[in-house]
Amino acid sequence: MKQTQPDYIEKGVRYMMCNCGAYISVGESAVNVVCGTCTNKRMMTSFPELHEDKPRRKTSGRPSGWHFMNEFVDKDGNVFHKGKEQPKLKGTLPPTKIKPKKKAKRRTKEEILLARHEKKKKVLKKAKKRLNDKIKRQ
Image: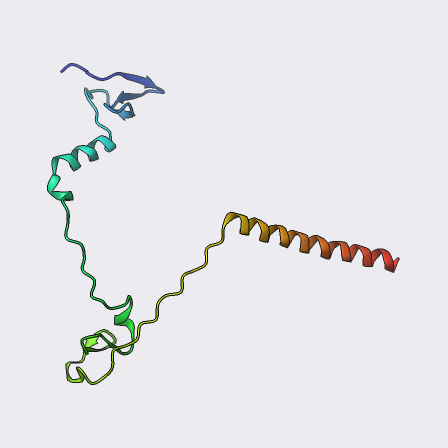
């Protein structure tokens, strides 16, 4: 077979260029090479059924971690103890009230820089005070 791609040898190792321009180390008898990225692209385009619109997971309407709760009652009245349904207790308890998660307050870069500056000022003030105390003692 005839070699179709450019190659070079460096420190006794032969490298060949992929179609995308990346160089891959190859053996002496290699005629052609395809890198991993190009292989993945070919795989994804040759199997379109793999990434057709998959049905999205349906939410159950229960909060995350409901199966770890000691007791959870959903809006239909189903009672669960540690994730196990208790059919005998169905409809006997009011639905569990779900508390919304607290969102963590994100600080902007300016706020972070200001806080850092204030901290440095505080440290410098303490150091200055110590220095003044030492001078007074002498």
